[in-house]
Image (tube, rainbow, N blue to C red; front, side, top):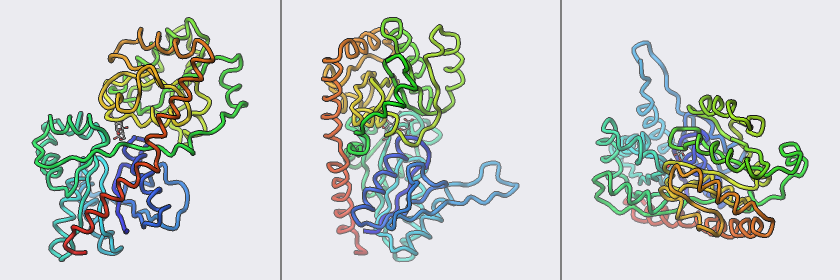
Amino acid sequence: MNIAIVCYPTFGGSGVLATELGKALADKGHNIHFITYQQPVRLSHFHTNIFYHEVRVPTYPLFDYPPYETALSSTMVDVITNNNIQLLHVHYAIPHASAAYMAKQILAKEGIHIPVITTLHGTDITLVGRDKTYRPVVTFSMNESDILTAVSENLKEETYRNFAIEKDIEVIHNFVDVKRFNRKPVDAFKKLIAPNGEKIIVHASNFRKVKRVDDVVKTFLLINENIPSKLLLLGDGPERSLIEAEARKSNACDAIKFLGKQEQMEDILPIADLFLLTSEYESFGLAALEAMAAEVPVISTNAGGLPEIIINGNCGYMSTVGDVEEMSKNAMLILKDKVTHDRFKTNALTQAKKFDIGNIVPQYEKLYERLIVLSPAS
Ligand code: GMT
């Protein structure tokens, strides 16, 4: 199949998922055309079946706000027309679903029918999309997509709760390439971070308010009072400087390391003993799944779709949002002895395997086949 994928090219979960999906489909022989404003972060290697089309947004003194969506729709039209594209799959509704609708209408005038799939990822529904500034356009373009998918049951319910959706939403959970993350930890790297055998605790996010990274630090400080440990904070975003200032004030400042944005999560996660995710909401929690694939147990909140991937008391524990006391106690329950820790590690891997790339990508392929067969042009 010839498929165009539109996503955010940044470190966010939706862009990561979309890029990994495109790469997996290309490995299976499909031709994948990425349309984004920058090379996606996880698209660093050359692949014969992958094509990258950059959306250029020419500026003009009149434009206080350069019209990205117009440029995106025009690029979609160009890529679809010139590459025999059979299907357009957009990730994250804003503004990709409405740009796709516009492209679809333009192409229809030329007699080209292009089916559109919109995959909802989370904040496009739960935070940004609900804002009345965006809601009418988001609602309309979701309803106009040929197929709507959500990355968790919880996100599906949230979408129905918050928008007047007139069609089925199909749930296809996010996935992870287990064999890529399930690596042996590099001992030398581990020693460098934790020279005295301290436990290594990791958090990764875009440091937005919804992640409550301050709760990560609070939980860590409570753990560190009892179990010597180090906290690695991966990623960057608007809250980082605030969190850094808070961390500096604490008496365990030296134990907290800000590593910034990291592309090779599979090199870092295997050295972790525990992953912390204290978000106010996660539609899914791809970062937690990647940690589990690296055999790392997860301490998280029970928000959104997290209960769909984490089994409480088996591969991690979940608590009410903000309950840092309980989260730290649960973390210590896991870390207290090697036998318990090993059991949680093994369970984390077993659970991650249910979401392995090999189980999930065929679900998207089936959807594509269905849509292409239904398409009047084919
Ligand atoms: O977490 C973010 O803020 C980034 C965001 C995105 O769209 O890039 O992530 C969302 O999509 C991920 C991939 O589907 C999910 O794993 C995250 O849970 C979801 N984030 C939220 O719902 C806050």
